[in-house]
Every structure is written in C-alpha cells, then in structure tokens.
Image (cartoon, rainbow, N blue to C red; front, side, top):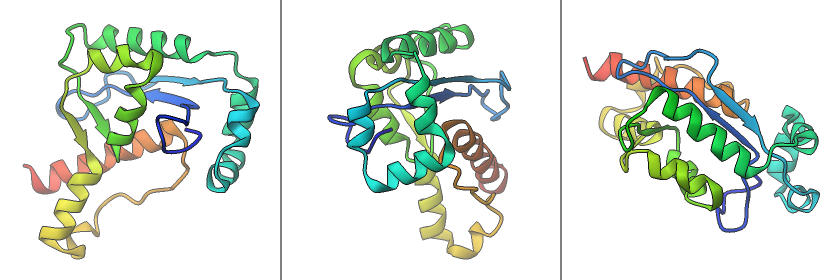
Length: 171
C-alpha cells in the first residue's frame, strides 16, 4: 500500500493463499498481482514506504505493471471463487488484517470483500491475547518474522505463525 489510509492511499500488491481449516495450503502458488498506480501516488508515500518499497523492488514493479485495480480485483475474486465457490464462507485472515479489510472495502475491491465472510481472523490479535494472558515467555516458539514487507512473504509468515498458535494453544 502507498500508506495506511484507505481513503487516500492505494493498494500496490495483492497476494492470497487459501488454506483449509487445519491451515494447509490448498494451492502452494497462491494468487499475486502488482497493481500499477500513478507516479504522483508513489511520490506522496511516506518516507518509510519509499524506503521499504524501494529496497524490496516493489516500487519498480508497480511502475512497470500494467495491471489496473479493476483487473487485480476481478482476478483475485475469480481465484477465491475457484477454491471457495460459496459466498460468505471464506474468512480474511492474517496479521493486522483489519487494515487489509479497510482497503478491500474501497473501489473495485469491494466485490471481493462482499464474497468473504464478515468475520476475520487477525493473527496479531491472537498474539496480543497470548502475550497479555500468558506472558512473553509463551511467545519464544513463535516463528521469527523476516520483515520482508512483501505480500507473499508476509502472508506465508502469518500462516506459519497461526500454525504455531494452533498447535501450541488450541489442540
């Protein structure tokens, strides 16, 4: 994203992996798209975004992309429907996923959000609950984040983190 405000910022990269209830990937390739945005949108990013997206190569990929937000949204929804053919059963999940949900509520992505269940699974919330009720010591086994800040890597790390919580606290 060009920032954290869904009213003024834009999605740069979308990635989606679908799992079963046991967090097994249904498709190891997943869906990924880099969305073209205007140079003025890139120029208005915060310094953190400029530095991070420049370092990861995302800015260059956005500049060379020909994918519109409409195309990305249509392709993402088709991908989800391929694995989840019934509306309002798939849940959006990930770390701080409330922010992703806010962006999906905007523009062409709203159709994707309409297809998803109204409930979300926020891995960050689970981490906070575990930390507050169990203490820092219970988090020693949590898979370490690489802090790549690219959608694919971040999502796969979130799935691994959720697997840790499932196996450690919910068996």
